[in-house]
Length: 344
Image (cartoon, rainbow, N blue to C red; front, side, top):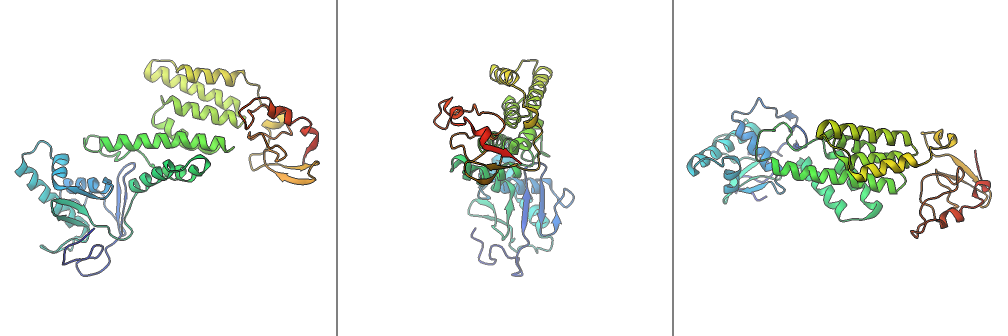
């Protein structure tokens, strides 16, 4: 951002580099300035803290003056709102820079040209910015390439936006929008990981989603599908029981047909064989492929060019859909592979 003629953005009034500012707004707000944690105590006016949170949560950290007045003091008359803004800016500057002299420009806060802004100091980090950027990257890609951005987004989401401001009205639209993005990222990550043969990789994020809303059926279904794909049939059915209990206790309702149909399919499926159920969790087994006369490692034999399931053909003929989308061809292509592979 452009600064005034008497100070360069990102420097203090003495010309020293401004201390880095880090803000964690997903969950309870936590703001760190250099090595100082700005808790509630230093603020001479709480509206100074509110103004900082508002600017931090804005994508470019700059808002028109009238927007600030309408957001923070919607019921006040113009003169009272302008006075409140003046005092809030003063309180914010004094908190960020206790040694700032009257009349000296701030290295962090700028009120100029009808706008109120935070200067882009070096090493400015706002978790909301990083979360939005990760969502944007995931939306710009397709397939397995989305996984890193989705993982980053779900890892950054430490809780609902400004969770310690439950009674303030202005954070609500942003909170709801970010939560929708997080929920979508969790469900899409679970699907991407399941399709990549890593069904359990999406479980922690799905569990967090269920913990935040026990009646979220899509999250329950994601967990059921993840456990089912990992041959944890009992866990998948147990997850349905959790969903059923939550729906009845919290909403006095039954799970949707989609959820009930998935549970019925899992219940009708065959339990995993003892050999498959006992496979080590530490890593994939190794196989000696007699056809290719080479060692291979993984849950799936590379001898199969059709099947994309995570279960090795050595244990059972595969009944997964073929890559072409036609069922049956995959099973026929696996004929004889049990005798061609020997687990060691």
